[in-house]
Image (cartoon, rainbow, N blue to C red; front, side, top):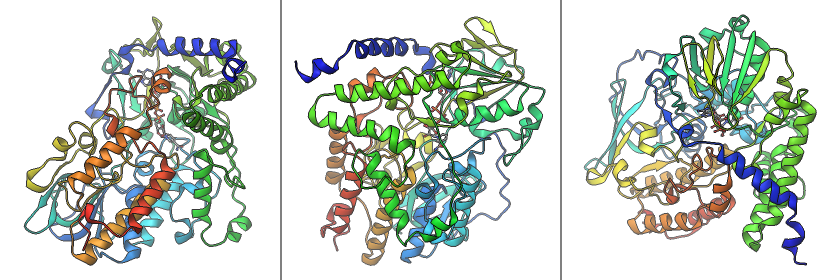
Length: 590
Ligand code: NDP
């Protein structure tokens, strides 16, 4: 008997059938979404009460999230440039952590590897996983430590950036009337910033209150900074969506609301997240360079590599990582069965755990995910499932179909209207797969000879190493497309920031412009297209979601993918390029 027939059990066959059946429940109409201008920025933007800037800076960083802050900090450390200007629409630095402040917000990646520049700032994370508020505080301390507030323009949106060939600078305009020049520009706009509202019929006819979870309305719910949502005590609330945001929000609303209805289309995978307080003595004993070592260790484990000692030792490294390793092995030896069997065993354990956690067997069954683990991003919470044992919390399972419609009283599911006071949409974000870059940025970049980025990238992203594009001198990108993708996003951002900082330093030293040749760019686009992580068979077998472009992985250009040989190989490639002598492919040869 060969290996394949030994392992392809009837269990595997039945599971495949079950997964396919679950996938097919999702209909075409579910995938549409609308942009409602009224929710694009639920909290009114702070009035910008200052004179417009008409000065000249060395570097403008569009986006003051972790990527922008880390780049600013590295540039400050190298000393190659003086005036660094962060511009952000939010009133504070921190990016996603400044904009998102929903109750229960925590990062599910370990704080010691997630928070950037811990050794330089002296921040001590309180817990293994810290709250959004703590992350925001840390972002502010990075901005203070590296004097990034000095030239920052907050509550300000860049509206246009145009290359001025004669003066070799970018002309930048903002919605606050600023018009200044900048020698270098980096677009660090983040990837999940535009809330996605489902196009549910009747959505605007609802007579109660509604908002998107990622633009939380504390005026309505009451309570900020971890306090109880006191205005909800006499309210019935519906949450639509059960992704990473909803998983954190739902237990908090259940604590506060009179009644909570959780409207589920596809159940999430929710792994436990024990969260011990930081042992300060341990933290103080860590040797210099510990953060980089810990990050590399996590990176290796979660990329399918082996390490002597799993330093982070959490759900990512012990549950998700073995599956990542088996998928990698199957890509090499061509036999996918082992990976599928391991996946099945893992998912069975997760489903068994739901039976133990949830008292009502019908609810437990409805909460069970029937797809392979990496079809969706796993989520983490230690009391999500138990929330459904509360008398005030009810799961409304749409069995993959979503909400039928919304009427004046509330959501209608399977023909039954559920009257509620408030609907909270935890329905995710537009992504690089659904929305072209310039549309997400809301900026037109006009490069050499009037070339518009929206035209140059009309058929897909075009970069060299994900960071620079032909026709756009001294313009850098920090994005997922054509770059390295890994769950510890700040690790990748810091590596890319180091790369950009290197190029800025070289350009300043050589009085040169950084711009890839068309040939170098085309070669990278080709490399991305051929190496793209498109296990189409896998992606197509998944229930629709963020990762497989809502069930249609072929819909977005292959070149918009990340580097297919993995994030470790990507970082090695960048380092090798920096250490190699010839930089003529980006105009830095002399
Ligand atoms: P997701 O896209 O992960 O989840 C959206 C949810 O809304 C899904 O459950 C989806 O169902 C549901 N949904 C969408 N449209 C409808 C509809 N018409 N009817 C019913 N349900 C619908 O968004 P999140 O905001 O939860 O998370 C996005 C990302 O943000 C994560 O992947 C993660 O990268 C990041 N994040 C990270 C956190 C962290 O701790 N690091 C915390 C929170 C978010 P379906 O599954 O069927 O599509």
